Length: 256
Image (cartoon, rainbow, N blue to C red; front, side):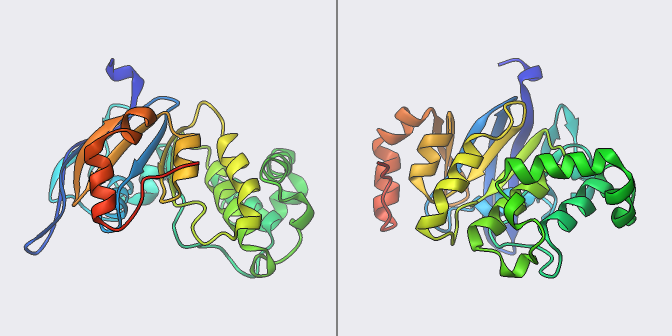
């Protein structure tokens, strides 16, 4: 694999909390345009690894490269500026803003307009047009003027991914996008995730194996903070080691 194809690379990442090793010598390469899933049973260290990649945690050892540049010491907001954006397991939105206002704020900040988003929305065509595109893409047009706290949970998750896309990432880390979403609201979310722009490289952390196997073309299995194996979905689904690990944790590696 040529280095030009790799947009995000973890090299020998270690994270220790006192005497506990939460992440042990993890190597991970995300290719350009990838649909890459990071899976593993509960307690495997998936969220710790994502926190290391995004700068929420500082590694004890190892390096992180984004498009060939070392970003190990950069703060989270600096990584966002470099093109790496994440969504969160737990919804983090402004309850009293509407989807339109939330996206206008995000787009304005991304375009360097600071806090003057309410002016930008009325006066700056590019902000209004971008908001309109995102609202349509994420099925939010009908609810764009409702306060976020009254939205159905599935719509809140869609808004969160729309916010991430408003930052125009080249690398998107999706942290359990369907967690807590009721069955009746999942299909819209699954379709939207499947239709993410091809030029955005996606690393998906997810327990829902239907989503993982329908979405990913590459999978990394994390167990006890270390990489057990990596491969395409068929290889992973038929790997006896992987099946044993999931069953050993009382979980199933199953998809319909």
